[in-house]
Image (tube, rainbow, N blue to C red):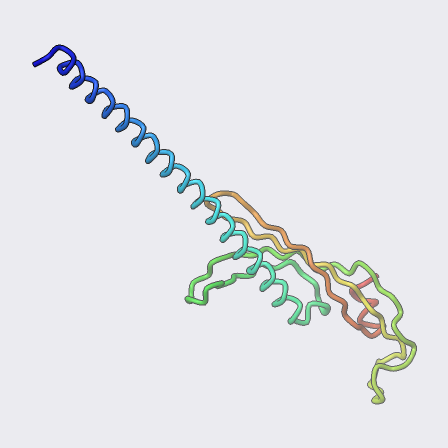
Length: 159
């Protein structure tokens, strides 16, 4: 065996070890990058579901007779409809932020007892908060709705 051949055999081992090290670093980097991407996608999914849960809770409050006695509520939302509550949404007390005289004409041709000729466009603000107990992340949704109220109802809830 010649002298330069024996040195070449050792060099092949060194080059293959360097290539193995580079391949290991590439695999570890890919693994870490995929974990970061998975975390980002999970956070986006949670945020989207939490926004949908907050909107669902606000819609539930708006669909109720909330102007009779506005109060804060905690609403359980089953976002995927599997029978288990996925999110607990804190809805603050609806607040009447503005009232404007809508019309001096009665809202219908039928006169009811206690009905006045004045109706009011009232604007209500709702704030719903969803918090993730695991990560501590939270989503806050602020929404508004306009409700037409007769003057006696307006005087009770919207100063």
